[in-house]
Image 1 (cartoon, rainbow, N blue to C red):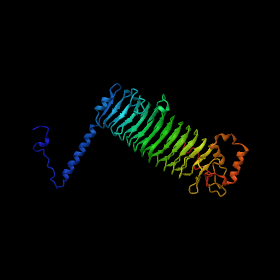
Image 2: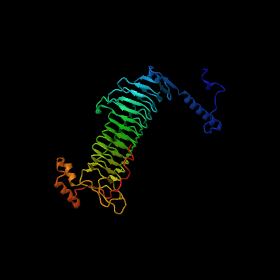
Image 3: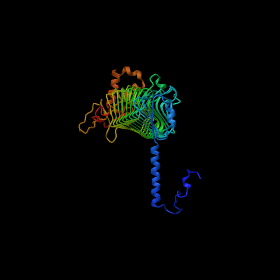
Image 4: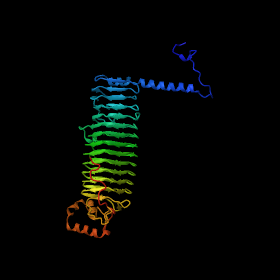
Length: 442
């Protein structure tokens, strides 16, 4: 009889409850002890392995058990590496994983992997191959990518189907030796429901965060600079963009073909083209955002329907907000349009009243008065007139903008509203802005 088979020895056999008989308290207690013992053995099995520079990293990962921690000592460690089991890859201060300039530096293919405290550099430049500092595959949900410096890679973090993952408190600086169209994104997300990108500082490359075909994502308190788009949404629904800052990018928030979003309390400063762009974005809330000193338009709304655009601050742009392409059913109230060269550009012939429940918006160029002191101007405000539409249609006519003929047309329309061809009117303009300038700006 094999000596290791203790269960077959006389005296070691345990009497199990017969069918139909309920286990007694002693049996339940024994079962609980077995569970506790198994749990304790799993905890004891987890180990930490400290890897010195020059020691091959991939064999250490392959020798680790699930739950182990691979701790990298300060210095340079050679990549690439594949993390194919649930473990923690943690760097001490000064630990660097350097790739060979091709492929991804760290590839994660197991669920629940943690990558913390590392500097990672040296990815390849193959866009279709998604060469990244950290590539998290579809088989690796719940990844936690935190407190890393990702420098001079094509993509910083790529969540390729890795749902419920977290990218937090990283510094991501993209390649500056590539044209913007050839560069990757700081964080790319494809079909990763529940992904969170929080508290990162992202600069250079193409887009700060690019998300496509996903839902229930949460992007909060990130800072973006020197990019094409700070955040670029495509076909992504039921998600939140809250408290982010975009500075010196081409566009702050480029929201396209998405619905059910919350875009709240974000700040755009000195972005080259637009601070906020809604393109085919429907049923969303755009509330409490600040856009200042945009190069072309504070906000561009194109074929976007059924949105709440409220309590935003648009200041110092050539155009405060540009509405076009049949955008319908949007509510506009409580916004502040301050010192824009043209407050509104509306391309269309419909009459739009930007007032909700007797409350409109604030217009810094509205020479209004309020005799009854209710905070609402006593006369409606119309930001555009017939001549504005002529100038949009025939830009060369701008040379006549100060001519007596143009002034006569504007004088006539002011006294005979029936001459209006449609457009935006605020029937209850606010006498004071809804909040002080700079409340949400840094």
